[in-house]
Length: 240
Image (tube, rainbow, N blue to C red; front, top):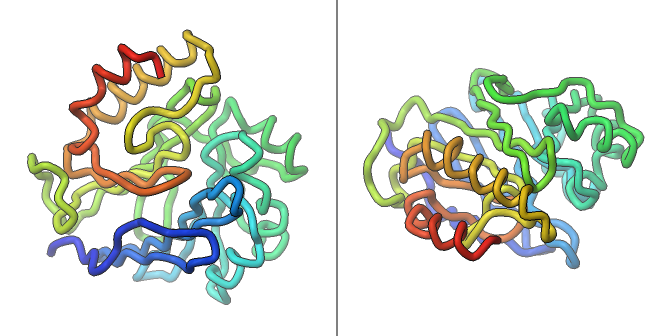
């Protein structure tokens, strides 16, 4: 079975509606919120159980809650502690009773900023279930101490050595603000933080996942690891 991507591009605009990608077992719905920050939020739904998980309740509960609908929400994963990624967390959790998941080093800051307790902390080697579908957690420090990425390994698609085409995708990676098309996330002039971030991204992401991995960042459009891999040396040399 191949990736049923259809017309999915990952190009969304605030107020412009969602983009939906249908995989064999999982539906990925991407929506952009807040004109100023244009954050991406991702609703994942298991096709077998109907279970749903939201990655980043970034803003605009009035947009997110209708997407979630009557199916409810089992968990919200907050990719990191920065304010623009959890402004709707309190409203979404109040409406759904969802579990709140975050990287351990960022959990206290998320609770302090939102008033919402983090009910489960995660790190390398942990998993998050979306019904019958499993997301593997990758801890990536540098942008924040507790940033996490999540990777879904599609059991219906074999690993590929290809250049990241959009019809066969074996891995789906949700990167928060750790990786974007064109570079890693910001480290605000902190050289040590940049070294930590680029090292983690190079070794934990590019070093373990194939080129056909499609990644979904916290802002802007998507890309594949194959399309970005050749730029790693350039990013490291430029220092951002």
